[in-house]
Amino acid sequence: MASKKRLIVGISGATGIIYGVRLLQLLRQTDVESHLVVSRAGDMTRSHEVALDAQQLRELADVSYPIGDVGAAISSGSFRTLGMVVIPCSVRTLAEIATGVTSSLLTRAADVVLKERRRLVLMVREAPLNLIHLRNMVSVTEAGGIIFPPVPAFYTMPSSVDELVTATAARVLDLFDIEVDELQRWGEDIDMHSKKRCGNQRVDPR
Picture (tube, rainbow, N blue to C red):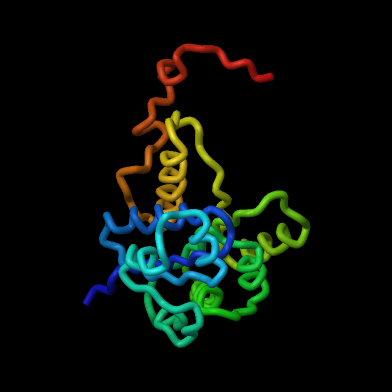
């Protein structure tokens, strides 16, 4: 029997929870089952940044887990998943994953994904970065993870912040080979030879 396609979604306390919300919304259009875990700091950020209460956020996922439930399914390598994305990922969460310190279900699940050689994507949201942050990013990368800062793409000519958020979340899903209609591809959906997109205007590089 074919196993279900599952993706673990972690939301930690960095600003930018809208990225996690949008990714969960996009996943609902696919056949991938979402498994959500939100840190306590993530819930604090949610209360400041989006018009969703804790229950409404968790209802966006197929399955959700309490942050302290270290015996949950996603804490075991025998529970098959495509991997995990932490979106957004705070530098504290980054540090725990980089050092193998698993103080919660979120970081335990990430550690399991790494040990099982599955895909781990961390949308680290911090600026400016100090040397400790950078070294932790290197450690995660050396362990097989992917650091994916929320860097917007302007070649799609977005008309709103919402479009930028959606494009970024869709690009993250693309790393797991999860197709969503909202992702515009250069050379396919976007005509790289067209001058009309820029209105034939020259841009002063200064």
